[in-house]
Length: 163
Image (cartoon, rainbow, N blue to C red):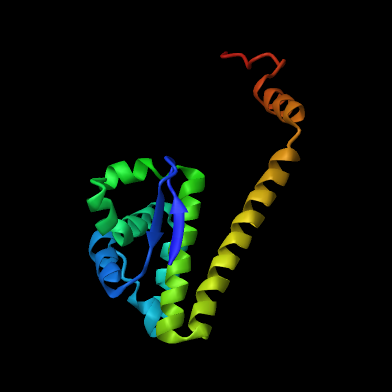
């Protein structure tokens, strides 16, 4: 199980079941069964899709919570409005917690560890990419760059004669 709070402060609990996995496949269009079956290539593709696509993650969380959301009369679009930045991250974490529990119960601790490692590596990759991008931006000398661009575009030479 994993829990998170939406932008209104309402708490949601994700429990992964076979029913939830079927809903995720039909509603979100993502088959997560390879995560639980040890099919390496498909497993990696499912993890990559799940971890790198925030819209797909929102759809997966929506599908997992659909019975609760239906009871609360919250549709897909309204639920999406409840998933601002940090909330989506918390929802994704809650889903991954629920998936880790499910995987551990069905496939053992090694399989659950795989998902934890994949999540950690994703977080490290994002942090590294943002840090490198920030360093590259900080290194730009805007004044020098503008001067160089202007010098290349402006010329004091007289145009060639047309004759």
